[in-house]
Length: 83
View 1: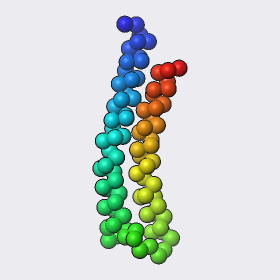
View 2: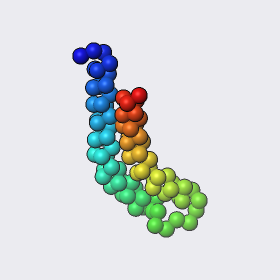
View 3: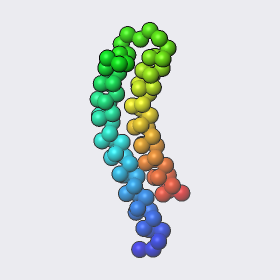
View 4: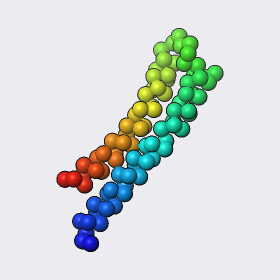
């Protein structure tokens, strides 16, 4: 195999690892964020002040952002293979 073939093979392996990592971390991230939002310190169910609302929004956005970042990196690696 030439050098380009090895590069494609390694890039494909990295993309698969990133995709599997995104799939594996999604349930754990959901449980962690949901537990944090329901804790006594944050208590997102009854928010009155703006700081608590901001923290709850950040916690709520963390789930799709982390998963989307990992899937986006995997997609980026796959696109680099194709070009």
